[in-house]
Structure formats: C-alpha cells, structure tokens
Image (cartoon, rainbow, N blue to C red):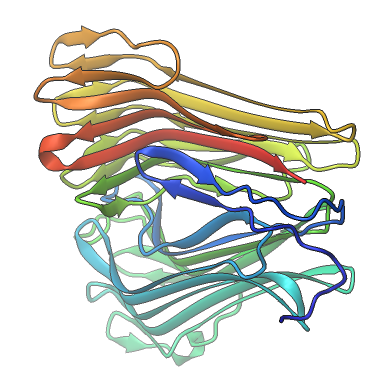
Length: 408
C-alpha cells in the first residue's frame, strides 16, 4: 500500500476520449466523506504540430484527463512520429503517470526518442524530456528538464548543447531555428501545471522536410496537480480526432484538460490547418477553457471551434461545441452543452443541418454524419458537434469535442 499524505481519496474518476463516441467518464461510488481530494492530469506527445499546414495531429500519445486516482498511468512505446511524410522522431516512448509516495503526490510525464532528425540539417540522439508537478507538505512545486546524448547541426557536433539551459535558441541553416529544453510552470491558488518540450522546430525558410511557417514540438510533456479541494472541475476539449481501421491516425488536436480550472480566466489553444493523409483536411482549430474551484462554487466551461472539414467530396462549414458544469456549496449542480454547424455540402448540393441531439444523416456513397452527439452522466456532460463515418474507408472523424463535469 502506498503511503498516504493524510487525505482520503475518492474512487477513480477519469476521462477517456473515444473516437466516434462522446468521451466517457467512470463515476464510481466512493466514500461519503467530504474529505479533500487531489486532481491529476497530464500528457506526453512524440510530436505536436503547433502552426501552419502539417500532415497530422499529435502522435505517440500517453495521456489522461483529470482523475483522483493516484495510480493512473498511460504508456505508448516504440513508434515513429512523422511530420509532412518525414520520420522526425524514431523509437519514441511516452509515459504519463500519477503518484502518491513519500516524496509527495503528483504527476510525471516523460518522453524519449532514440533520435530526432530533420534530414541532414539536424540530428539529436538519446533524447529525453520530463516534467513533474507535485504537492508535498502543503507546497506546490515542479521540475522539468531535457538531455541529449548527441547534438549535431549539419555536420558539426555541439557537445555544449547536451544538457542545454532552459529555452536555448539555436540557428539551424536550411531550416530556421530550434528551441531546446523549453520548460516552464504555472502556479495558481488551486494547483500547478508544468510543461517541458525537448525541442521545438521552427521552419522559417523553405526546405524539403517541414513546410515553411510550421512549428513542431518534439517530445512534449505536461503534468498537472490540484491542491486538495472539496470539489474538482473536470473535462476536456479538442478540435478533431481521426481513426482509420481501428488505428488512431490523428490524435486530439488543440487538446485541453483541467482539474483546477483557470481562476476564471479564458485559456485558448490553437493549431493551424491540418491535412490528415487519406482521411480529411481540417481548417484552423482552437479550444478554450474557463473555470474555477472554490468554497462557494466550482464551475467549468470548455469550447471547441473548427473552421471547417473536408472528407472526400464532403465539405462541412464552421463547427463549434461547448460544455459546462457547475456545483455550489449547498449541493446544487447542473450541466449543459451545445453545438452548431454552419453548412453541409457534397459537390454543389447543400444539406440541412438536423436539430436536436444525436441526429444522423446518411449521404449514400459519401458518409454517415452524426450531429450533436451527447452523453450525460451525473454532473458530467460530453458533446461531439459532428462525427463523420466513411464506411468504404472504415474511417471515423470526431469534430469539435467538448466535455465538462464536477467531482466532489
């Protein structure tokens, strides 16, 4: 049995994103005690395109949304992350796990790769990045770092960069520049989250590997822990997620999750256009979250916005969704959701957007569309504005996902 820190934990509460179905949350009955609980969340990515046109969303993912389970963990091992058809990171392993031991309680996210290459322009070997956020003895803290076994820019080895200082910027001829060991943390009255990225590639000049104007984070990690609270806010939002033949070909874009809220501030995460090979073209995506946890009231709102989606001959206009949840100290609570879609076209023919929840439209020979797909549980709601299924290609794309809930 792992040592406790004097706070009684509820049964596990977690969010698992499911392609084609609203995200699910396991609400398991726990102790009736009002003892404070901790919230854990985090992720590790092999690569994540942050702007411009690219050929996929995040790859080689390990992640979990807000959970009170100090044993929660996720891993993804031995894979290659590609950008624009190029193998950027090889033998990638990601790991995100919560912990509760003598050092404290928190989350650690780690990502490693045998090598990171941009053709002959840049070679990084033995790459490891990690970040930890934890709560111990009444205090919040974080650590983050990146190390390399070898760094070569062009044909020149640079041993001084094996253990780079945080946010080290280096010019790379023929590409633009890179930022090594990008780390940081944000502490609030409700908790702390930290991030670490081994290297961010900035393609500022035309090259054959990464489209000009694109930024790519390689080995990207995040860890979040809330301070003990009587209620946590949970949920997530993302722009798109795609699956083909039961294989996730593009994971959640512009993903946001939370345990602690945002102290009432709106946090926005955006990504440029995406081309998911042989699946879909996606316009610009952004998500927002806004919420807080407090003695009188806890609340959270997530939104997702997608400029448009094209799947074969099918063209969908602007798509949006939102999900909200709240709870007051007198045990009153509520949830709500909404979604909108601007237009649906196949060639020159337009189709009406159905109203209401969980409506479907089958366009023969093109796709099955599910609109405003909603799933509810006690004090939790999730909505997918649109799910596109192309039976002939065995392809499914979730568009504009939002979910929100309150746990106490």
